[in-house]
Image 1 (tube, rainbow, N blue to C red):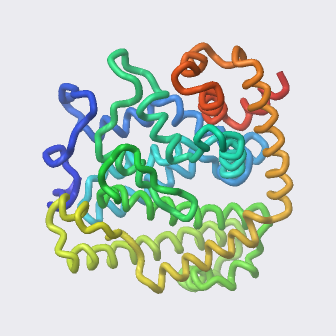
Image 2: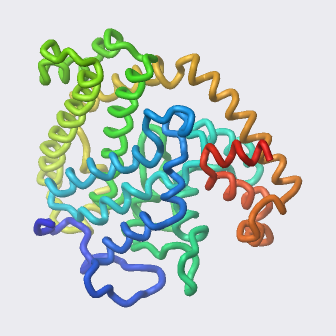
Length: 362
């Protein structure tokens, strides 16, 4: 890791862990956070959770896990270029979607509807619940006991599909590392969802070419000289990532300098995002987002699947509420303090798509 900037998070300016722990002999505190996330059961189960297509039924497309890994790769690239804490950035990126239930955003909407009278359901809030309560690999405390700045990045995660949570944390925005994770997430899902939509033939090259980011990327890679359709769509998405990441590095350096940011406290006091895109690039990315919503996420094929998901999740929720002993004893123990419906939501939210369907058939 290169020398950190003064405004980066380091162990010296960190607020540490809720439960103090002795330092590790050869791993930093934020490396340990990253490793705790990777070794968690919630992280492993991302392999079987929907990104857009259902794992096990559509094996050629991204899962929630592969999306997460791509976010982490982009996040580390940005953090390194901006002299931020790469390990903290990676930890936030790897954990940012732990709270996603099976079947993607449709599953989340169904759980939220089912829990309207019990506090609702939101996957950012569930992520915090997982890392502070539901994961329990240590005898001395519940949760993973992550560093304050890691939890802050998760609580304040923001995107068009993510709502920041209070999480009992004072800052309105995360560190620059958390802001990098936000943008890395946005870049990753737009670019790989475009690629997967084209692979599935739900989005055509002719449609996509009307979007400036796509047209510019195709020009940059010299698409006319590439005969293979698979290579065309893959290289196009990678070229978009490269353009957006390059733009972010340049614009964010300028923003940090102009704001006079010198220390971590300056970042928190500033109150506005410092990691971002130029106005032109942000506008183009918004065009891509609108295009994907209209032509991919709301495609009749995916809408039909969403209708099935609503039925599956609702049916399973009602079945377990009426018979809580279908849950493992571990989740039943949360009922007295957190309520039956919340415990059932915790259990279902942790399921993979396949396990959810298996429970329905059982």
